[in-house]
Image (cartoon, rainbow over all chains, first blue to last red; front, side):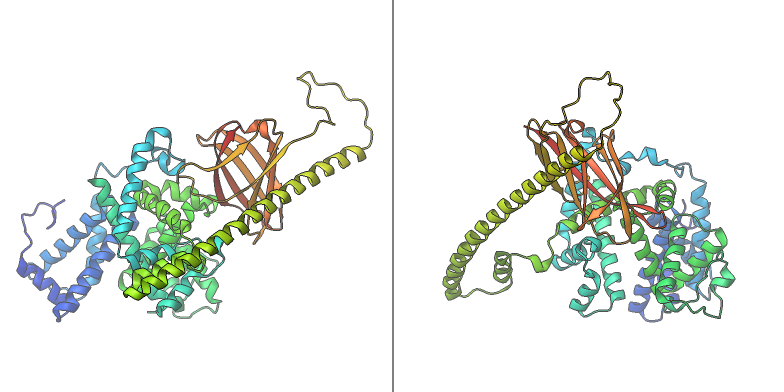
Length: 194
Length: 326
């Protein structure tokens, strides 16, 4: 997929990106934070819609919005505009051949315990998970493991107790843990693709 | 924006105009949360009409709190699937829609490992005495004289460990004795029932090989199973001595809302072995008894489901175990 739009030869430049960031916020630091937030939401938009390459789709969306600005258009609400472009990009992904429905039966490893023939793959998954868990900072590792411990089994409100101990609201704890979990997932994905 | 304070739809199909209605409906916080969670799950499972999906997206895209909530709901949905806690409808929808994405399939795999690792962690309050000492040493600068004190402490810890070991051994013996008493009680109860059974008309004799006589002693072995990650390697080993007639599997449960339980045993390669319905929990334990002959040397998975008063059945836990024959 062409980042600047179908059939275009446009390439992202430093000036075009600077214009986009300035449109997000006059302060460079805050603009950077807003950029990260918008990109994460775009990734999740494509992810929750079931796109096969959410990160690529998010980058294509941002490139198209930057291109619009680069062409001299004035966009009053960049965030809403990004969402509109993301919808179009998603519709384009639906036309691609790799986006076919995969029946559950084609992913038996999820439905059933691993068969003996899958032993190598299982070992690799376990190695990647353990490695990525080890790579987390110790306090993040402890936090994510404690947060996801089965509360029904321990009969303790782990999460509230954790938030109290860290002296942060439950919402802040939730947000922190989601990002650690996201980091862990990305690390596992990278490890398995090597 | 406080998402929890947003108006929610009660009892009718969601419509964007209603979703953004100005007049909030007075409902309990918990009900609001459940409705929002349900709506988000429908969104993630591709079960919302396009207009409603877009309305929800417009909301979470511009509101960081709403975004975090959808993200958390997704994690809860994935964790619910991994722990076998989704309803049958949700599970079917999850498998047909959510798992169609390779990104989601990898996420479920990662969740399975993360939850297994989290459940395997001992709660902090159960950290051993030695563990606390080790943690103290890791975190503190150690002056030379503290080492001497450490040696004394270690000696004390060894003494404590030996005493603990002795205590655990006696506890183990007590548990074995309690199980023996329980077994004898069950056998006595069986004998009593046989004696009290009114004489019946002679029945046609089966043509199958003769069953053990009613007076033959029965050997029962009882095991307490712990829920484990099915994918976390070999299951809990259970050794059955030769001559065992009956195997009793005891599962600790939180009765909660469940009025009865169902259990199904499959081999690790999913061949059905045994199924029990209408099981009851007694003192937080569900007990299954099945003929030992049904459990040859193999790896098994036991799935325990709970049935609520309204007829809803949900999987509660899975147990994996390996039968070893002496």
